[in-house]
Length: 357
Ligand SMILES: [Zn+2]
Ligand SMILES: [Zn+2]
Image 1 (cartoon, rainbow, N blue to C red):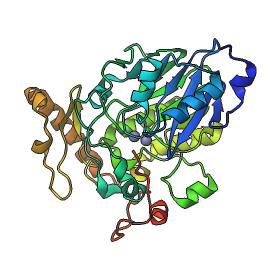
Image 2 (spheres, rainbow, N blue to C red):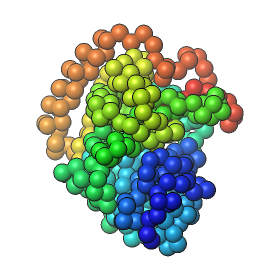
Image 3 (cartoon, protein in one colour):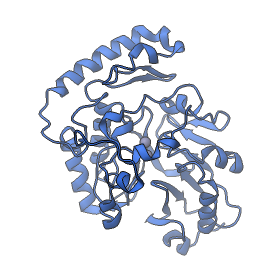
Image 4 (cartoon, rainbow, N blue to C red):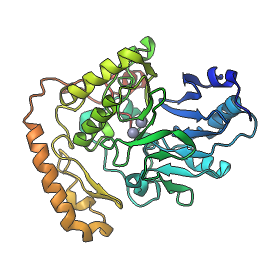
């Protein structure tokens, strides 16, 4: 359908306005975005939690008219809360799904993500653990790799920016003209799901959700990269959009003090990242309880690449050791020691958490 000024600016019943031609939608605790072009075509960025497909279709029809279809679905990354409806929607719309090459193994059934680190947070995560998929989804047949030149299929004025760390092939999307940034989980604008955050609707920039972040060095570099873009608008996977000077100030602050405020004080991946390649996990550091060892998680197909991997690992470990020596007196991700996992919904919402995926 023809895009009018009105559809370009208003919000529908199920969506919130972000910037001209861009609307967000919250499914449960995660956001996805509808991004349109002046000609009337549009793309979907991320697909919410499992079971959201019909709600997403309904919102798309409110925005763009009956029987509308996107020209593409783009994924910032493949964590379960961002790909819940992707299979159903891709199949229904016959739309290609674009991911970064390093994210491919986790959406084509090849590899699971590096295991989450329960030592860096509980709260909502414990409450939602029933939702974790047991194995990676497989959307082979729909999935395509993002063009290496940085262009974004279906969105000529945009470019994608590699922002790994929270996941190996995490990407953000940036519209240069009016400096709109869709950052996925590279950073988020809400601190967990605390009741206070929900009631106050407070907007505050935080690092990527800790529970699922397996490479803090890359995550920091990604935030530095995004801060340098000096965005005018930022909308993320969790929390409300932020604008202007306040956004830039908080993002610069996060970038400058990332190891103090965003990285957990201690945890499985704090001193050593998970190593991944185009096939998925190569190795992960042992968990704190030593129950999971690196060898147990090395996938058979990757053994051949062990030489290269070892070199990478050595290089990364060296880097990590330097950072481990940094003085990090406090962290908002720190879990109160001795706090047992919360058991009721209210307790879970109330408990510390910045740990959704
Ligand atoms: Zn997320
Ligand atoms: Zn995530």
